[in-house]
Length: 454
Image (cartoon, rainbow, N blue to C red; front, top):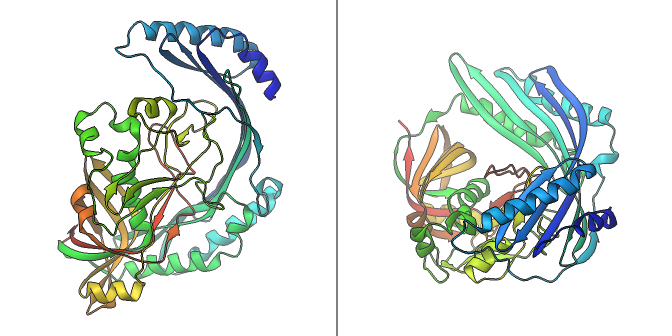
């Protein structure tokens, strides 16, 4: 296939061009309550070409090799049209052209597991909450996505890489009279089917939480000192901070570029944030991005000081910074955009017990439940929390909403735990869907966090 792609690309008259071909295979099994509502697999493939000509950069997607000549001609024409209407020509940061073939090491390749076994395992996990009185319904699905990718460029790159992702996730809904509570559950990853075996305890735990929430009181609104668990710390890191680290989201905003300058003091000195797609056996792992750039770890915030951005080749040139392999596409239908891989707060030195002692009185908040950002301000939901009194965890509370300002909150992160955890189920909807975007962190303590409630 690489030779065929090189043959197609050799016909392009451009300053630079690349061509990506993918075969995407998906399997999905869905239960709504006791009902099996969907089961099946499908395979699709396609091409994405990018052409740089006279400073204009154009992308085109097509589905058949027979369309390649027409598609590449159109992409070149579009690049020339763009070139005549740009204030500044597009330039790509230089890289070394790589020739490599990489297949991840999978502990039980899910593609080799029968759909009957996948169905039975999903049914088994789905049945765990449904056995309990007080559980109203479930929405549990098995998903599996494999991307077989081939990439060539006029600079000489030739790359073949597989990405395989699978998991079981969804929601458990409990009910008492008119009160409904929804708890999310998810297991999986990108290093093999083994990750979703023997996970009954996780579904039992989340079922128990859903039932306990029926008896929990709503939180009283106010300003609290809090501990966020790794899930909440990771979502804050991804949503509130991580997107501002993506160079394409700030490059056209003078205000944000000023705030997100390298060397800016943004957070407390205990806070270091890293994005590292090279962490093995993690959801966000990959070797090369969809521009053929070798993935690299990036320290985005070092002891509270901004020290890096995530880049495509274009933005790396724009910012006069090094490439780091963070330009990723959803699949064969899209050109790549800047994405996070594994973004997390670096572990500190405090045990969870030490954090509780330091907190004294406050809230222990667990597991993200949606949210939104508006500029530097954010609102996140949490699935549940516990009141903490005298350093001891006490009663559960519900209906948690966190409101804050990114920069003030990063200053108010005063202690960082030593128990880093990365998410097994992730995702990001920026522009396209990236199911392999992972986040995490250790437990962290935050002072003066605004909590909405009753």
